[in-house]
Length: 40
Image (cartoon, rainbow, N blue to C red):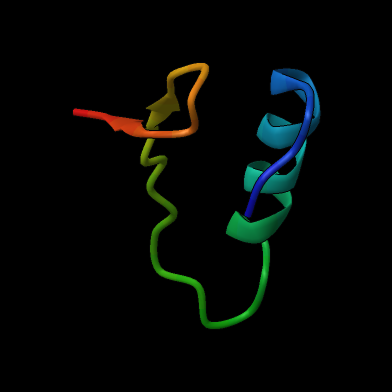
């Protein structure tokens, strides 16, 4: 799940928690540098 704005992403995460059968929702964050390489 991804979004251009953090408030939109948080709303999507909250919605996912309300789905039947969903036990937990975790947020995993990563950032990319300007060349597109993932930063640890």
